[in-house]
Image 1: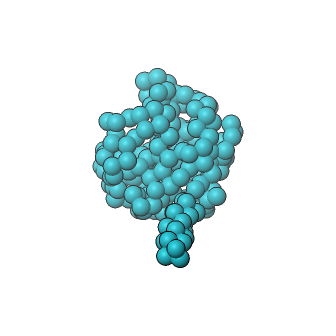
Image 2: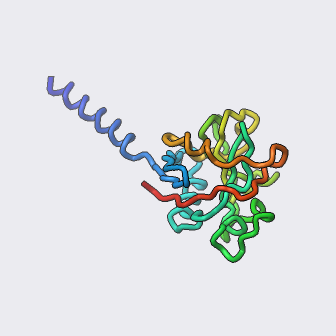
Image 3: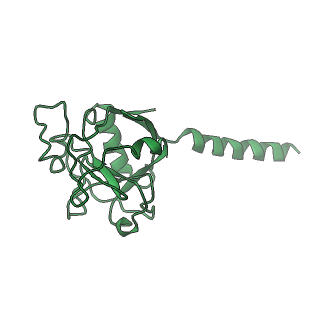
Length: 184
């Protein structure tokens, strides 16, 4: 009987460790707080970069410069998209990044479904830097071509309220912005 109790305790501690070790970020929008679970096992470098920029307040005040209804909301241009910076230029938002080097792709089997966070990039698969997007709906055409590094687990209704852009380009006039992103 003791053997079974020890086995139970061992498995319980493993499960408890996995639950307790989740990496959670809190994205504050004007509409409410959004909880994001990160996937360091699938995209360790993207998660590290995201946390580094978030916890050093680089994302604070950054606008959602490209938002396409039924597809995604893109943000994260810390150079030209930060509405509190002297370099802020809405017409250039989406063309900048951080001062850190670009990241190599970390493609995985995680599908681009509603709530997924994925690294935005140019045509070069190894050009992701600071920008990311949140999917409003499934986008299977992006699977295994963009680095998924997290998913909204609470507060997606607040993401749904982000102001949409032009139906063709996604460009947003007077865009919503990130208030802050921090580790929970």
